[in-house]
Image (tube, rainbow, N blue to C red; front, top):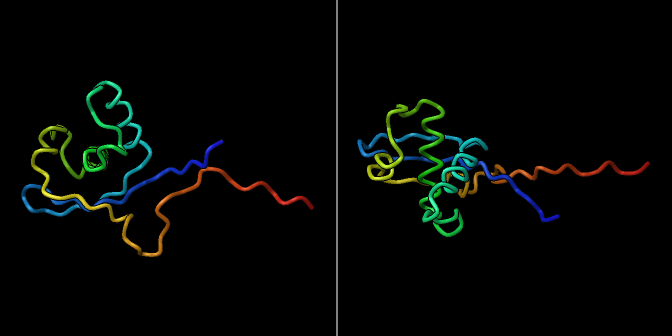
Length: 108
């Protein structure tokens, strides 16, 4: 089995009104992207459109946390957001990814 890592990016988002929000994405936001992308065949995969992907999961996380109103559509968010930074890429000593598999117990 391939080595699988679940990424939960922490993002800094600058909205169109210059307000700055920080949000921790969760599995729910990543799954929302996958499910929405399946309905939009023209959307790039996360690896092929990393800015598109970050923008979508930021929108999903900000809505999930009620940091932006539920009425803010994906399209309005995409078109008005000024900047998104993946804070997980910064070297702050915290892990960027979690390995979902646990090591087996050592034989005694």
